[in-house]
Length: 83
Image (cartoon, rainbow, N blue to C red; front, side):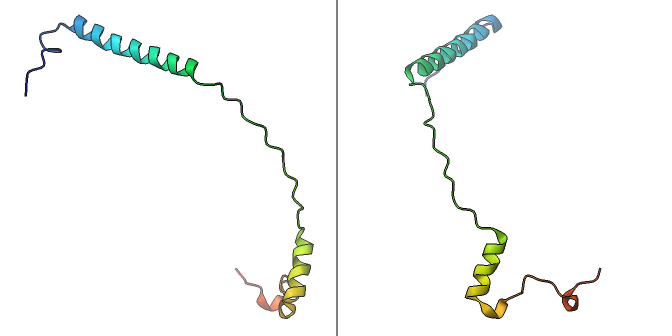
């Protein structure tokens, strides 16, 4: 492997300058990328108004489909848990 004298034998000021040039180049490239990119304008999506089923309607539907479970949503005294 060949030697890379790029960062050897440099003063602290030289190393700081090399680092600053990299930071400036990065910022310049970011600005150029932002200018080249098209502006982001989100397309408005219309809100959908879906019919909402109420709890009573859901219970009535379940009672119609499963008659053996009719009234299962009500708690009775026999099944209450005591703390």
